[in-house]
Length: 344
Image (cartoon, rainbow, N blue to C red; front, side, top):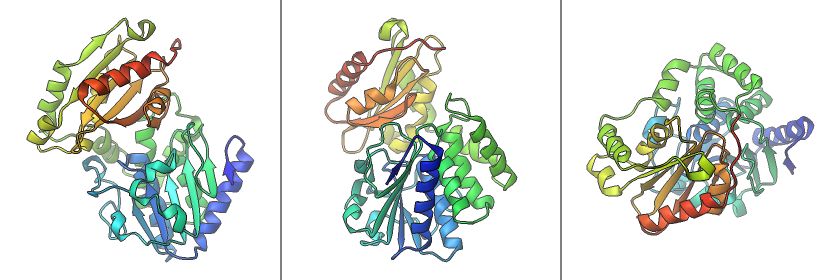
């Protein structure tokens, strides 16, 4: 069953997900997508805390090795709990596989085989590009974050919000709304934010940690990326494009992981004259992780999908093989194939 579009069908799907989680046929695996962000990990952790408060066996994982929580997310309540486990320690035949913030089954990575062994598969997501893969899907593309759906699910589990659960949901909400600056921010999401703070979420500290704080070693790497930025004000029908990249050798010399470089794209996109920013980060396998941001003139999710990735209109990404030159060419070709819109 898939639910999207109407409040009634979405509510029914959330009810069905809650019923499966409350009465699982075995342990529950709560799966974030590979390279988890604040929304994916915050949402899955929030539901894990809720289930475990009901004495329901639940673990949180995502399908990649080596397995490590991104540095910026190590403020999430419970990020280092014993129930956050690598794929090798996940039950092979779970009662429920519950996926959070996954637009497609491929984002399960090493956990994808569980789709065939789990007794039931559920999904909570807000990507407009979602490709169904679960038996029960609660999908709301109008939601600014999967954390909104996770909060509704926690309510259906009849678990009251506490500082731990509220903190996890806050991280999901504040990251995917861009600290409530994205157009997807709604009155309902702001009401949820108030509710989370009332429940004890340490909003200021969590927001600063996930959105602002960076290691000192990040600063010279950022400086180098800014110096090599290619700025094209006339690109994209005059809306402007900036691209840059960080080779693995520079990152390793600074002792940084690929995930530590996520803020590079946010620094690049600040140029007022530029709508779209693209940053390529070389990973340890020699592939290039692409981060795209738009201020509204370009639907970067369409660009990412064309490159085998996904995301949202104003924030998306993909992983590209090959050399830097090949990756840059692929990005520019994909951008050329996407129409632009006037920004209100």
